[in-house]
Structure formats: structure tokens, C-alpha cells
Image 1 (cartoon, rainbow, N blue to C red):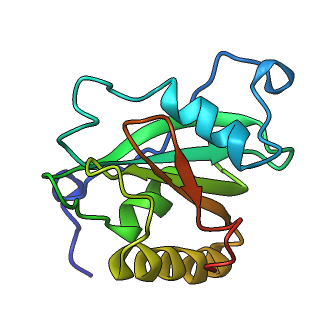
Image 2: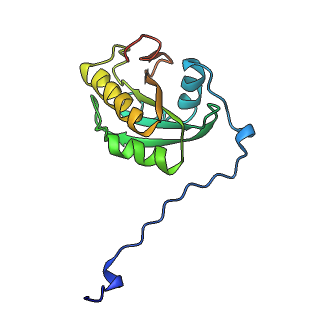
Length: 153
């Protein structure tokens, strides 16, 4: 048997670390709770002209484990990679997730692409037992649209 050169194998280490006790983390009970947490973590200098997608990770008790930026795009869209969403969720051992992105135009109406990616993430989450709780559209004028509340998935 040929000897394997171990220097050609890359070591992979997955790690999520939190210094906050689960009981001290904010809890999400409804779409407005999620909206308030997202807008407090938004870059208000770019909300009127650059579309951004964010991800909220939650534990089984709907306590927020973290919020991260997934993608930043242009004035009318950004790329959403479902694999990246679930890399974060699996790394953190999240039980559920919430997506949010802004519409710089101020329109609350979800696009066909918004609905399609929401359904795709919802279906992918079933495979990993990670529930998509909501997908929010946020506007610069302090309004939001919940795809979950509106029955879009």
C-alpha cells in the first residue's frame, strides 16, 4: 500500500463561540421582534441605495444566537447562496433562521425572486431540520413586510 502524504490534506475545523448565556439573548416571538433586531443591526448609511441580505440564527427557544451579513448587492438585488446560509446555521447549530433584506426603493412588495429564494431556503431547511421562520423585507422608511405573516411559504 502506498503511503499517503498528509501534507496534502487540509484540516477543517468548524467553530461557533458565544460568550453570552442563552437566557441573556433576545427572544423572537413574532415578526416585529425580528424586525426590531434587524434594524438595530443595519447600516443606515446604505439602506437607501444598496440591497443587503442578513441572516438571524436562533436556538430551539427562539433566542438569537447571532446576526450576520449574507450578501451585499446593488440598487435592485443581491445574490443569495443557499449553501452559505446553511453553512452559518449548521456551524452555529441553529434550530431556526430568519432572513431579511432591504428594498432601497421603499417598496414592500416581494419580487418573484424574493418568493422563489424564500421557498428554496424553506425546502432546504427541511433537509437539515433547520426551520425558516420568516423572511422580512425592510424599507428605509421604517416599514417591513413578513413573508411568513403573509403566507408566502
